[in-house]
Image (cartoon, rainbow over all chains, first blue to last red; front, top):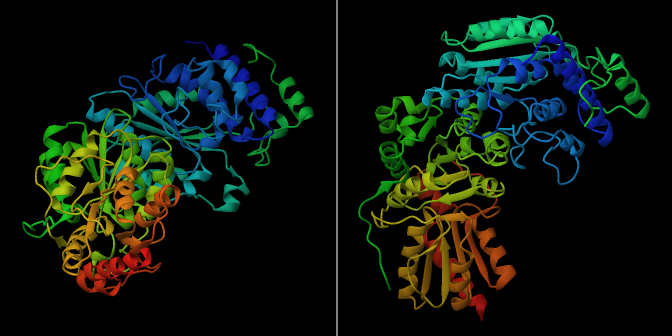
Length: 281
Length: 318
């Protein structure tokens, strides 16, 4: 689609969407959403080979699964701005009768969502199943998934990580958002993860690291490397080092904004730091 | 009264295996997943005939349920196989979010349900699974009574769009339903006609209900036996039709009375036709080691218990 500037403009607009969505309903998860804005923008507008229309089976296109469903604001904003549903619908986030539930779901028929997520640790298993379905259907497209780093504390992930390596699920690129934060504090304080890289490698995955996970070009470069490693008998893990709350200075480098919405004043500051680019919803 | 012939004891899990084998040949969308219990679930033939459509996931049930949900994306119809305990309680949140709430077309097939698992004891004898599964919105819950019915049900659920919990067991039990039966999800099967009491039974207790009806007949009590293979959606109409005639009901199941078939029947009756009811079920307890027959006797889940319950409920009418 796009040159880097266009992707950056879109990212800025996505940040505004995230702030305005959570502010309006005084709830939701801005921190992780902002940290992954560049990744989502790059994924949906440059990296994935996807169709413009949505159907559940997604034959003949790359698919994405969000495991850490609480960062729904960034997912919804990027899906809407990729054309899956009207951008105005972002106005209904977390409201009664909305398709934009607090955590993403297929249950309300929102285009772009293929499984519910929110209860953590389930997305990688679903992604593996979808990857195996692709193989059975002789569909050479890829499965992408995103997981929080704190989410790796859920045991189901390690069942899935073991399965994918043992069964050569090599059409899967699972990205871990390494922001080092979770609700109660730093992951190192809550339950230390140790070396995520060495853990994935020990389980038999290929690991690609993106040190600048909030830099569009670094993401594009790293994901291209990840893509080049598919089809070689191993699942691929991308370690995406991000800053929680990225792009809004007072939200950065802290877990405080994991699940807290800005007040009027804070919203104004955040929006000032991210001037409108493509038009607010 | 109408009687039924046991054509030879068989285990219901083998009915599942036979149904899955047939599905393998007739429906290429069907895939199967198993958590290290291929022999116990009788999935060997499917695995042998269709290795590319079979997924051995190891002792990792949570991942199995998630993978099954993912396999539906791309049009597959996944059948998961493990013991009932590990098919439900162990993976409840995975089923709730990734399957039920996500409207995924997954068939959760569960063997070794209830006390008749036998000697392995209470860790494996789940008596709460029907309750767990029937509470999930959109989940169909089926508990079959013999080999033939389990085979027919296995084949039928592949044609049903939506999540299904199919419950069956380990021991060899009388095989008495028709080999060529048409299995209709949600449709009760009336086995005998009667006027004094309705016996609504599911799973292994259906044969016991038939045995009880014979004895009750000798005693001058006319029992109408209804085989409820589908606990959700329940065939309200069939139950009401029978109970309106007989005026009382015994429900019989290999499950806790809390959360089981009996409660579902009680709700239908309370709302539409309040009626005396007796529950043949376990009494809010765990099981223990023993032979299936010993356990069913000790926990009051056999024809003798049904007879007593029927005598009591008929008295309560007066």
